Each structure stands twice: as C-alpha cells, then as structure tokens.
Length: 165
Ligand SMILES: Cc1cc2nc3c(=O)[nH]c(=O)nc-3n(C[C@H](O)[C@H](O)[C@H](O)COP(=O)(O)O)c2cc1C
Image (tube, rainbow, N blue to C red; front, side, top):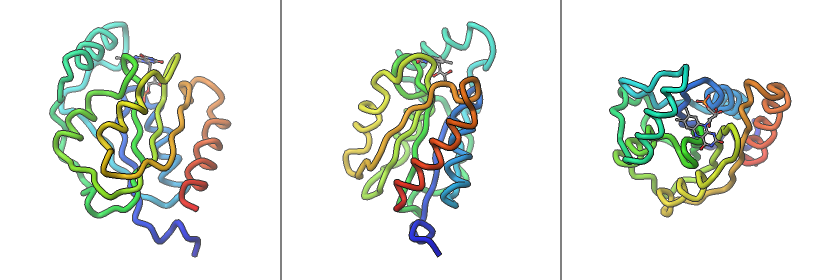
C-alpha cells in the first residue's frame, strides 16, 4: 500500500461550469480520496452573460448562498484539497458559506483553482480562512475543459500525488 492511502483525504470543491469538477474528480481518483461538492440550493445560471452579473454581485456583497446538505464531514479527514473557480479575482461565494459553517483547524490543505484569465487573489484570500491549518500546495488551471484537457488532467494527477508523498 502506498503511503498516501493511509491519510484520510477529502476533495472539497464548487464548480458552476464543470472545470473545477473535472480537476476535483481527477484528484480524488488519483489519490483515492473522498469528494464533496458544495452545491448551492439556488445557483446562478451556468450559461450566458447574466452569470457574471449575478456571480459578481455575490462576490462583492460577500453573500453566503444556502448550500445543499454536505454529505461528508470534514472532521473525519486529515488532508483536504480545496478547489474553486476564480470569480471576480477570488473564490466562489459557496466557500463563504462553507467557511462560515466549518472550522478548519489542524488539517493539511492543498488549494486548486480554475480561471479564465488570471488566478487573482484567490489563494491569498483562501489562506485567510485556513490560518489554523497548514497549506501544503497550490495550483491553478486555465479552463481545463477548453484548453488541453489531457495535459491538465495529468498535471493535476502529478501534483496531487506529489502532495501526498
Ligand atoms: C461570476 C464569474 C466570475 C468570473 N471571474 C473571473 C475572474 O475574475 N478571473 C478569471 O480569470 N476568470 C473568471 N471567471 C472564469 C472562471 O473562473 C473560469 O471559467 C473557470 O474555469 C470556471 O470554473 P467552473 O467551470 O468550475 O465553474 C469568472 C466566471 C464567473 C462565472
């Protein structure tokens, strides 16, 4: 058995259009971890320009969209991969809700994001909520479903396995 099989690992993510889901599923498969999707009860539309207006508004007003019941408990895990798309230069508002409900302490954390142009301040802003844990890595993917899907998949696998060594 490889070493990383012994640590209880969870991949937590939010995704509106599937890119972050693709990376999250790739990571969880490659390291044999559990996976937890943050799903707002009512999400912004995933198509058209209106998603930027509504999503951007949620970021600016630091909204906490109500999430569907979380099916995993982070207390059960030692290592957590956290992934979000970049929205208005930071993480998606589903994580506002997540951080308001969950204390993340004494964990190892690895951060990943998907972005269209630049990753902005997402990692710095996520780290503010993770001060009582140890962030052991971060990586960004430029819209992996549109750009070199296979290359991004193997980047994600290598990165995740390396983190777990
Ligand atoms: C509301 C909203 C705001 C966004 N803001 C940014 C941004 O500030 N910078 C950026 O590079 N991409 C931005 N994007 C693009 C997404 O980060 C990118 O398409 C990402 O791959 C989407 O991930 P997903 O498919 O998991 O939802 C934004 C997308 C949305 C919907």
